[in-house]
Length: 409
Image (cartoon, rainbow, N blue to C red; front, side, top):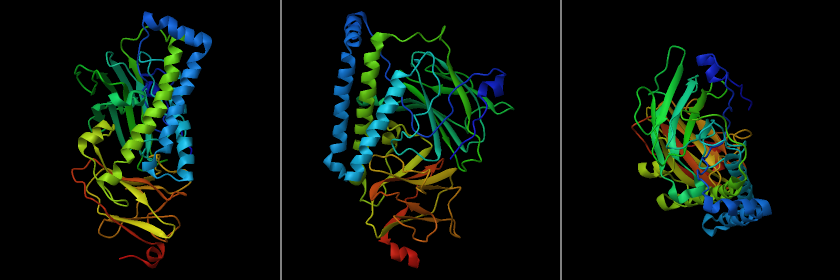
């Protein structure tokens, strides 16, 4: 689905035009920030001169393939094919982030490369992020637009150093955002509290993530936003050869770390609830995974035979938004461009009492709110409630498709 490109925030709010990337689908990441000291300077230059850095990169990258061979995921040939594609996507994202990044003094909000998905990414969302240095301060300016839900998060989600991930720090959402009469805003991101719109960072923060959630895609205007480092001077330096080995290794570690992180996460699902049922993660786990505190997710693993359907019934709480989606075994959202693999509160069909029924099936069950499996026989699923104090658990059952076609109680 094509999306129009809005005018830049700086032009709309201050009369100065600054170009920047527009948001696309796909979750972003933050590259590792490290410096090269004099003791390693010559050795890294030698690795560049001899191209040994490329060999090291390839050797590290080979290890990422071990994730695809995990027996606990019970992967089919189809799953492993998707897994290899997934690793390629993660590598592409890592190379883009580590190799094409101007550095934390010159950040820019950017999306993942097109097609990159991870961590049960929401098909209703635009995600963009900017890499930062937590020792520096940043100004974020933009125009609110009409996007249904908007939030800013200061995070440490660097999968190249996955053992050091600490999750989110400060969060700021649209209900807390102070706007001027034109719908424009300014946010200061720093460790020290600031007046007005302040996004709290910590010494662990490595990126600022923006979530934009569409209720009615195509009818809402995304936020226009840009970021600047308040301590930046001059312009980004030309390429420094001694940094290239670290950038290549960072990309390989990112692909491996991200794949391992989310595979471990997915394998917790059947420990928390039976297949074809949901569990509600605890708040601390949600935070470490980088979750928005205003979003609670019922998570589960699903598996259906060719003649089966999964029937989900729920009475939504009073909330700003909800959605249900399917993902593959690698926690990549399914193909929402060509299949109906998710539904949200704005597009769902409700029963007279305000409840809804979702039917997941391989073929059309002639039922309302049908969710396609898009060629998959198993995977993971999520039901999100946004901005609510209640988290009612949906009821779930497996039936024959013929029963679904005949009508369910």
